[in-house]
Image (cartoon, rainbow, N blue to C red; front, side, top):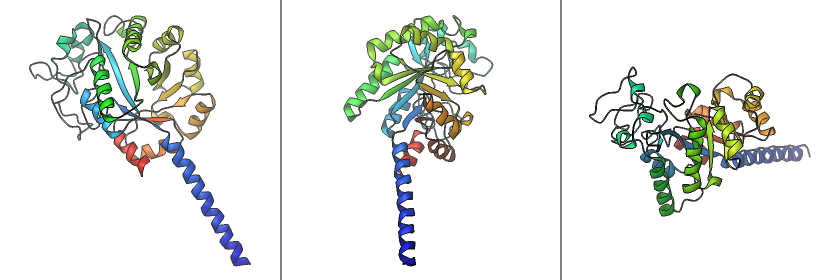
Length: 302
């Protein structure tokens, strides 16, 4: 009888472990896998090849940034200028940290922008990044490419996480004011994209407030990189957005649960190391933004 009770106890323990593992797997399988700037660890950032690579890997969301040209074109670019770490000019000359701000996208037409290369320069932070001659694309060209690739390969419901890059010191110098910038983006979305398959994100609370007031149907993500408390950040924003997206080191499991209890999705950035990916996923986040979406996918698949 004692031996029988032991077997029953062990069986219950194994069943409990199996159930917990299954539940954990189900949670992980629902993760929104976002390719940061396409797949920056593997291809030149914010370029069409980077986004195609992200699609090939199997991401659920393409994360990208926007700048605006002198002729009011939306360009996929993290900075509103030609960053020295990735750019060379039309003659192949180096752009230095000291003069990068002079290569101001907002003061150029797109014809000028596309003469710069952003794919050949070695990036020390991403030594495995494939090098190629490529320029910063128009958002329109990116969306068309994604649509064509998705149709050809039977991919459905690819989402976009679109960051509007702005701050008060850059208004009318490196980008339009939040109102003008936001309307430009919204008008593009209305004409070329599915509103249900995207969200707008920004560190600039002015942008998020403008979107909430004028385009309430658009899902919003607040970007956070400060040590201010969650409640203070939300109070400063003035409303509860759909997504709380902060630097992953500002989070832990308790904060993730707290945010989710308030009705927010939690999607941290930018999680690249294998150990960090595993830890963040165990917190029960709703999504994960990574330069290496392949590492996230590999972990989830195993």
